[in-house]
Structure formats: structure tokens, C-alpha cells
Amino acid sequence: AAQSTQSSYSYSFSYQLSICFGKHDCNCSAPLSIGSIGAELTSSNVSMFITSDAGNTWRQIFDEEYSVLYLDQGGALVAIRHTPLPIRHLWLSFDEGRVWNKYSFTSSPLFVDGVLGEPGEETLIMTIFGHVSHRSEWQLVKIDFRSIFNRRCIESDYVPWDLHDQGEHCLMGVKRVYRKLKSIARCVMGKTYSVTMISEPCDCTESDFECDYGFERRADGKCTPAFWFLPSSMSRTCTTEHTFLNSTGYRKVVSNNCTGGVIEQYTARRHLCPSQAPRGLHLVTSEGKLTATIASNVTFLVFLEEGDGSKTSITVDFGDGNAFTYSNVSSIEDGIKHIYKNVGIYRVSATAENSLGSETVLLFLHITCKPRYGRASNNMHNTDSHIVFYFYILNPVITLEGSVAFTFSREGISIVTVQVSAGNTILQDRKTIAVHEYFRSHLLAFSSNLDDHNPDVAEWRLDVSQVIKTSMVQATGVNPEQLLVTVLPGLPTAAEFFLLPDKQLTEGKPDKTATHLDQLSELVLRALNQNLVQFTLRPGVQITVYAAHLSAAPLVDTSENHSGSAMLMLLSVVVVGLAVFLIYKFKSRADVCVRTQMRQNHSCSLRSPSCGSV
Image (tube, helix red, strand yellow):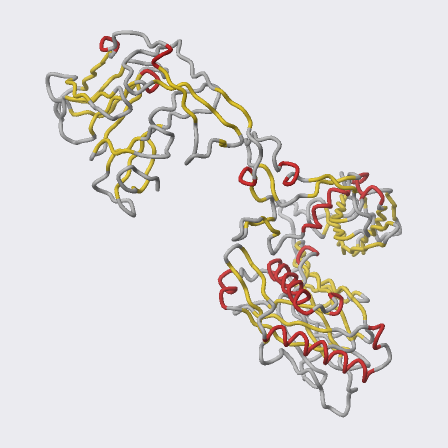
């Protein structure tokens, strides 16, 4: 709502804004709008308002709705009342709507259907069209206002006018001064009139910048990273260059022309690409499919999220005895083509490696025979009506059942890939399993407002897990490598954190390990109970993390048949190789039992009759 000199009114829409910053500058005299006095719009009692200073203040000119036409580049205003009744008068103003003179435009009242102006801003001719009665023909009334002006405008008829917003003269980084017709001048500006404008850039201030991608403006006005955004990901352009632009969290507003000032402080800075191991490697086919026909060209695409691509070699093993190594990522931007000569399931791998480390990603590709077509109907015969499950753990397992049993006998990280095949359609899911021998865990709860923003998708849970972990590390000082956090599927939102021992301090010392974990657990729970773990989900949405009373599974197994130590299995669903969101835990020093179902969360113990299925 804009401010009127009388009272505030609710803005509806503008009939015409005569302030222009385009190719042709126009008069800045009198923008008009329609609205109603009060806190909200109403369907009746609408009024007309006008401003002479680009919207800083408004004056009411009519108590009813009118059609307003600009003449002579805004030097004169013509208004005709909106009414279903026949009329024969119009109103004319030469002083930006302060005084209106009444004129008769027809001898017989006319039902006015519309008003048209001649082309061009300098026009002094208008046309009114309507009908005398509901049964009569259309009537056109052409009005030429040139006769009421007695002279051409001269230089003394104009005054300079500074464009400003509530006293702020720098708008979009530029200070502008216009030549404006005096409100008391009654003269014709004509086609030769030009808005002589003084325009000069202003020094940049913080208001000339908006938050860059991935950043949000907080209550203090500063732009900080959103909960889902990792500023380190900005260096991913290093896959093709040796430098990258590191955002400060701000970017100049589009079309803003300010210079100097704080521009150096807020403009993105170019940095040398950091030396880092490859991370975020992806391997997909160009069509996104996991199946292809024999003797056909298969195009593989390799992407690297982080790491200097120019110094990172890529080795692609097609799984059929052929493998190729490329010197950098940019050399294979168009993809890698390969033809398979035999039917089968091929384990395709891509490995990115540089002096700081390496990363490998797998893809299991099904090569099938070419489709057979019937002689009569030309329809493809699909004889496979079964759903087949392919489990790739250490060794591939093919089954018609939706579960298999597998035992992990030692600590480590394993990736379980599951494919479901129905005819020529194959879907894939991937789970990352981390097995640890000693751990402590506890459920987490949140302030209720988090549920309002939970879309219950894996990517969101992964982002929030990272934010919770960061908040817990800041509040407790725990080593990030010893803390795992996962947000569980479903509502209300719940999560679980796991504490792992420091291997250097507790290796081979079970008693010291238990004491160490107990101390870490007490430290974290104390911070949670004191409401020290908080994070901002988005501006105005503050989330507090609490310690829940019960854990998702027993932390101690008192059975005499098993060791007193514990095993943690971190089970994660990775959507497109990114999302990690399920955690499981079990107990047994000798081996670990895993039961998973795609996109579900379960837990089991060796004593459970259902234990042992994946």
C-alpha cells in the first residue's frame, strides 16, 4: 500500500506509469492508480489517486472510477467517468490533477464504451466511442484539444526534478534529474519536447546487492548459506578451469548500474582451484537407461562434482575386458561410446584419480538380444512376465524374491546395488552400508515447526542431516568424523545420531572404548538438553533439536550367545548416487545381520526370526 497525503489506501493496479527508463524517456509527472481507503481492497467505494513525485505521495482526485488519458506527454489529463449511465461531459486538468475543468463533448448523452488516444505520447486528439441507446448504432466522437492551448512551451515553463524514493536519490545505482513541466504551465510541449536528463552513477551500497544463489537473507540483513547449500560446491567449475569464482553470498541486482563503493566487498572473487581429491563422481548412460541391445552403441557420461578435472584422470572399465584411461574430465564431456558383442550383465566402473586420492563408481548394465517381431502383427513379443531382483553386494545374486540374506563379517564401507527388472524396464536403488564394532546412539526430536517444512524426500533428509551434524559439532566440539546423523523417513520428523570411537585412542582397548563413548554421549546429550543445538531452516524458521527418550533399537544385547561388544550398520538409500538416509544397527562381533527393504526403514537383531534378509 502506498501513502496518500490524506490516509493510506490499498493499491489495486496502475492505469499508466509515465516514468520510463527505456529507449525513449517520457514525462515523470502523474502516474495514476485505483484503490480504496482502508486496510484492504473492497469491491465498491473505489477511488482514483494520482502522484506527482513517482509514487512517494498520493492525492485522491476522484471518489469514483474514471478512465484517464494522457495528452501531450502528460502535460494534460482527460478523465471520463466509468458508469453504466449515459454521460456527455469529460474533465480536463493541466496541473497534474489538482484542478479539473468540466467540458461537454456531445449534445446528446452517450453510453461510453471506451476511450482511445491517437498514437504517440505527444497526441492531443482522442476518440470516444459508444452508443446513444442500447438499440442504436455505434457513435464515434473525435476531440481535438489543440485549440485550447494558446502557445508552445518555452524553457521557463520547465523545472528540474530529481527522481527519488522517499528521499533516496540513487535508484538502481544511478541518480537521475529530469526536466519537468511546471504544474501551472498551460502550453503545448509537442513532438520537439525532450526530457533532458542528467544521469550519473552512484557508489554501490549493500542495498544494490541481492543474495546469490544458495544464500538467504537473515533477520540481520546478511546473506548466509541456505541449509541445503554447500559453498564448497562452488569450486566444481574447476573440472574445466584452473580458477573459479567464489561467491561472497551477494550479487548485484540485475540492471543496477552503481560503481565503486562496496562493490569489491560484495563481488565474487576469483580463486585458484583448490587441490583436492575427486569427489562426487557419477556414471550414467546418455539415455539414463540400464539396459541396451547387443551390437548397439552405448554412450556413457562421466561427471565430477568436486576436484580439479584438468589434473584428474578418468579410467572407465566396460566390464567386458576393455578399459580406457583419459587424462582429464573435459576430454570426455561428449561421452564415451562402446559396443557390447555378447549378451550379459556387465559391471561398468569409472575411477577418478589424482595425486590426492581417488573415487570409484559402478554401473551394472544389462545387454540383451535385439527384440523379436511377429510376422503378422509386427508387435514385439514379451515373454518375461516375472519381476527379477538383482542384488550386487560382494557377489551378484539373482532372485525372484524381494529379499536375500547376507552377512558382513568385518568393519568397513560397502555399497549394495539393487536392480528390479520387468521385461525391458530396469529400476535401480543403491544403499551404502557402514559397519562399526563399537558405537553409541540416541534418537533425536525437533521443534514441531520442522514438520511443516518436511517434504519427506531423501534429498531433503540428507541436507537436514548435514545441518544437524554441523550444529551438533559446533555446540559440542565433537570430532565430525566420530558423529553420524540420519533423518528417518516419515512424519513426525525424527532422527538418530551415532557416536563412533576415536580409533587412535581406543584401538584394541574395549574398556577404554566404552568409557570414551560414554563421555562423548554425555557431552552431546547435555548440549541437547540445554537447547544448544539449533539451526535456521530458512529465514524466520528456527529449529531446536532435542534428545528423545527412547532409541530406535536396543543398545545392549545381554544374550550369553553373543559378544558384549556392539556393531553399527549405517544403511543409506542413495538416490541418483547422492542421498544417504537410512541407519540400522546390530550386535555381534563375529558377523553382522542386515535386513533391508527398498525405501523402508527396519532394524533387527540376531535373535529376531526375520533377521537375515536384504
